Length: 305
Image (cartoon, rainbow, N blue to C red; front, side):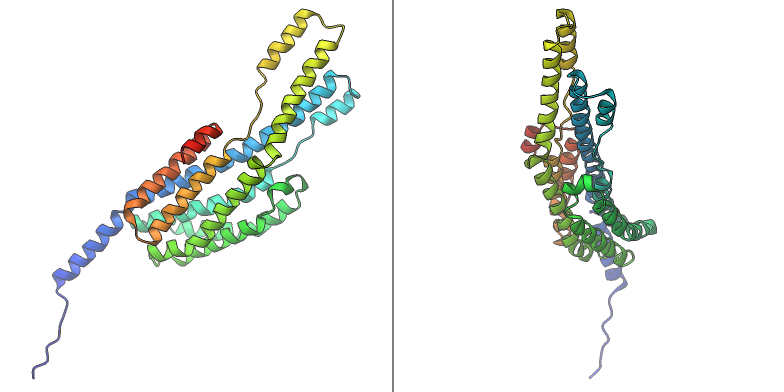
């Protein structure tokens, strides 16, 4: 019996290679959407903590003005009150470390689907992993922001695990396995955002900031009204001024939470090779993140879900 050796035809090899390239290239558009959504989320999260800082500063500032107008204490006391603030910068740095690692992950997805060489992504992922423990310690030492640092351990784990996945698949180019390994850390980042939304907006934290500002304005106007040295024209002027004092509100949490949920679903689509839904989910995540950046009302954010 003559034994025959079966060899794959060169034509079939080329066809298989082309099919693989076509499959990867078909994801290049959705992967760009995924990266754009991650970038918008990072911007929204940065703006969110700026919003929290502004609302806190406004409450302190108006309370100091209330004390000053009502002659409650010395000028030195007023100056001290005016300088008070809670510093949320370290809590913000923790959140941004998580978001920046998410951006690195999205860039790695895009690099794999487009065939780009981007060794800097792994370098950035390593740097974020190295720096996260220092950020956690700094945030823990910041007593003013304790409300917002309770999940620092979750953030540290998410940054470390996502960084490890990025580094492991820098050259492997195994898109589906990378997405599967990223499931847990992305879920942890999602939980971080969910807890912040619950602790900051759904709880009494931002509600009390808003109430403090409203009460301070009311008390300022009351003091001016009761002052016998102030005439009607001066009271009218004070009222007009108060009408232009816009409260600093915190409104972005719900839209950010919705955007991250869509991005998490988009990653799940990559993990399951559901290419059709990937682009739509990533674009939805981008839209919600953009809504957060442009400071929508809570009703707008809710209707976009």
